[in-house]
Length: 118
Image (cartoon, rainbow, N blue to C red; front, side, top):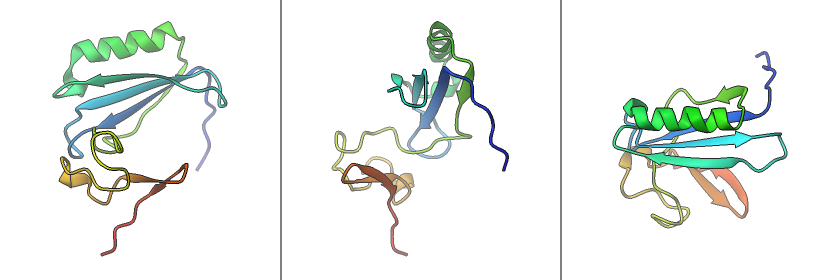
């Protein structure tokens, strides 16, 4: 696979929802370099991808920071609830059964994919 040259500042998008179809949360970030902490904005709605107000706010956020490259997933990458805040860290989200065993977990200060035995 050929690695693509990324121009900074970079905009990132992460999509979250109760399943792999409906997006109820978008997290947008801007990074000025690979070593900088990202500037983060969160957007929540019943369907973020069809919400014109949210799409406009994200576009303005990226424009305000001069984003040159946007990286985003093909679809939802997890549930919209915050592990450790909305449900106990290390457990599956009780509100989003679709994501059971499919999300990330924290081990010490490292993030790893939780593997659920079959």
